[in-house]
Image (cartoon, rainbow, N blue to C red; front, side, top):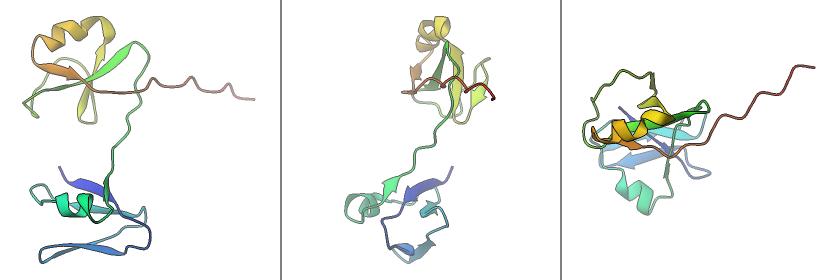
Length: 111
């Protein structure tokens, strides 16, 4: 999966070795897996983009600690599994970890 980095203000491209990455309309660059972005992050002012996922109340996002291709019977939400809160301990016993998340805010009623 490609990695997205938020570019610092005024940046129109980033260079890693001989590769050039154009900044998109959202002010991000997209870098393929395996490309080392540490110099951009440590000294270039680029920041990894973290995708947000809505988490229904009573559900916890989890991912496997070591196997990115792990599967389970719960619904997949992005790169994570939406696990009922009462099943978290069981999933942890199989190597899954809780991903930090915020609950979905209730929608405002239509007026």
